[in-house]
Length: 109
Image 1 (spheres, rainbow, N blue to C red):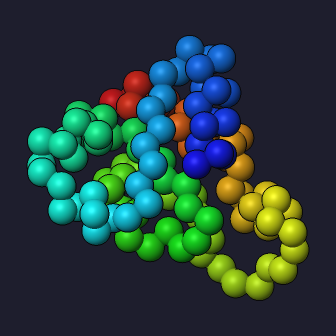
Image 2 (image 1 turned 60 degrees about the vertical axis):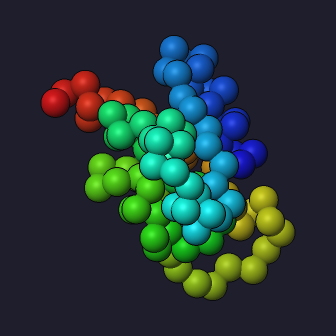
């Protein structure tokens, strides 16, 4: 969540309004009323980025086919937490870059 909030600040400095949603449980969120889920993740907003310090598998359900999932899709790192996050590309700048790519792509459609 910290990286997402930092990315939101970076984007705001560029005039890009971003929403950060914490989703600690897909199951609990998926069981909510559809109107609530649509309020949290409006269907009209397709520029979505997930940030997970674990596998990205499964995030497509929530970010859609245009979304970008940032996470760990390989094995083999052993280092302090911040070093691992940086090595796996789980950074505020990576998240902000993903949002920028999605915003640019939406503007050219």
